[in-house]
View (cartoon, rainbow, N blue to C red):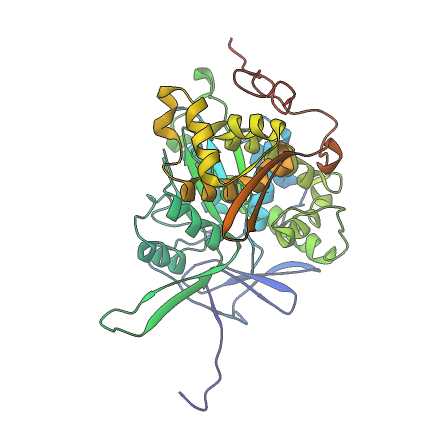
Length: 427
């Protein structure tokens, strides 16, 4: 068995072989759904090998439905008003069936009473139902490895903040990257997990503020549900689960159409997770959406997310000011200038030393360049490392819409920095 046996890849919930996608229904008969460009069907015998982790639940047998029914059925059960947000929700669900990733991270924000956790559970029922659908963010990389090994979809509930190290690990898990640790009871052996997983995060506050994580995220804010539209939880889930077989059938029909259109979609520009959005773009027509509409919605979503990243940074307004003046010098000088100009109350939030400031600028640099027309250049002159801040002309920024994004008025911002305008609606 060790030296002569064939080695077979083993999958969790979703697999791919020969341009076909297989979904493990998780029932006692080990049936699978085979999706190809010709359509989908239920197989009694799976042509690929699946394993089942503890906690996995069975999906109901799907019912053949037209792909166009998917949006109509799903809209009845999710608390999402915006067309863009609904397309992005659908895009994330579709990405969950991409066998090899990468996967955008789906972030749900909203105050209490917006049904964030319900939406997360609903997505899990469509992709990978589990007895414990919502998890707490693990404190160690070991626990994250265990979750990734035993869950096709990972969902973290009720976040208020995200540690920098865990943010980095989630980035790796979204787009692919090995996470390794020393094997137990050994000094020189290493075990590693090279996995990609769809990830959902939800919380009340805007806890995703690091540029590298935002770059991989779809961020949706849910509206509050009016009291006269609320219903008992059991009634809601009874209605959803009665529709779930049709939802799955319509979704699988849409994916089959996407397999037929594979490699025909060719958007002019692609975001960081190009493979995911090429896949999503190939499945838009079954829903009656114009080609590229999901990508356009994602681009608009990224602009809004960039606002949160920049406005949550304690150094952004100073960078904008110094870039307008033309700054060039060591990180120590830049940090001293910022501390000199900052209010006493702001000092505690500033980077503590030049190295920390440099790391902050490196993480902000892509967002600053793309959305704020501000370039950060690191260079070395002999033994001295320097940082240059400079304004970029408008033509460097690729417009994604015809409208300018909104942001706060100047209050310490450079007068010609018109990237943001105030957009607060109090009623």
